[in-house]
Image 1: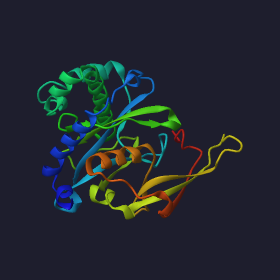
Image 2: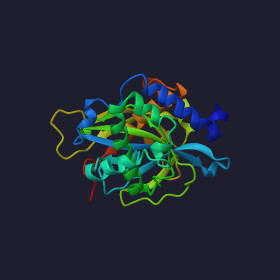
Image 3: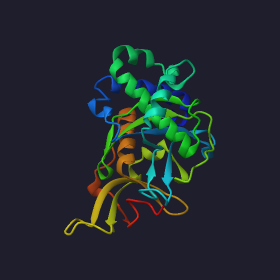
Length: 274
């Protein structure tokens, strides 16, 4: 396992094969994909952790700035569909030398599931556009690895379509005003059970319903940091766990025996401070 994680040349083709085999079992883009008003797409970006010297594989996330909703959360780059632009861009992605055109399973996907192919192209176009806007990820140089099962974001009534990608030769990113900083998490750390926690949150929303629970607990992953621990939780946590389960067969420990990390969600969590 350690050898596979450390050397992307072995790991990345394996991820492509496993994700394709998994998505062949059931539909990813059902009728819900057609409701663009409630759908979003994100990149689940993998890259090299240059600090590790040997180029260890890592997950690359954003820490959201104080000016956007859910400030301080770790998240994947992504957002809502821009129909006019993204539909046009999606038609280019299958051309030779473009991300879908280079994907080894694209021709088979179009042949075997043509109805879903157009939605795959659309949501990948959305995620790539957002990745460029938020982090300046070069959309033409990424390697598409495959889609992941969609996740529901209950708080904001969104259905999120994650797209796993490999960023081969980009170590520096230029975050936009939406992003406080870039956080890289080694896959080795994500596969270590001792890094998982119960994330206890106190809700401090200004218009909280009388009698509603003000404290809740969520499964989370804790990454030590010089400025304090970073906790991965919520929809991004669920996407990450789905990826780890599909590719490595990994599941996090049962939450009842995990250590507790506490935090508060303030009045601007749902809106940002703008």
